[in-house]
Image (cartoon, rainbow, N blue to C red; front, side, top):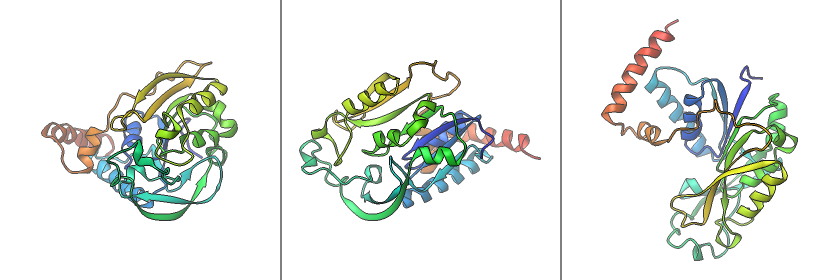
Length: 260
């Protein structure tokens, strides 16, 4: 059980950038991150260590788990692609390249492994979580199942964002949810969609859907104003001079603050 009362979920953590930025920007929130790909899970932990050394302190409000989140609890196949950003619980749709021309290299499966899935409902019960301030989800064709797997805890969720295919015949994966299905599910569970934006590089085939609970004001104390470009520079050891100067003084500050 955590001492943190405010919770953020990061589903499909990939390299940890989004969750780690959320942790840095929101020190009074606990970020639970989930990554199904064991290779990426190792990368996330390595990136966290790199960042901690960089800023001179431990990031204690970030925890990452190596399993998938879905709407059922079972052992399933996970398809690891040559481009790890599109690895998924779902295999690719037949004739996918009709709507995704030029992506043959990206959508090439290099491995298929057995992993376990859990539901957020079970995870919340196990960890005594009763309030979820934000859900950041990018689980490659499985985002709606993540929401469905919250069970009764969907009523505890304040807001978030998920990815969706615009239409079934333009999706990447088999059994991919569509924007209409996402809208129907969110409205049914008393959420308001605040923004729908096309995802860069998807040729209009995918969107990010941002939503919040209708009945309550959005958590204004959550800082979602960030981008991951700084962390990408840190992880790849390609930082700018301004990054180095700022982080030098940040390390000195943290060394003084946490010297005991």
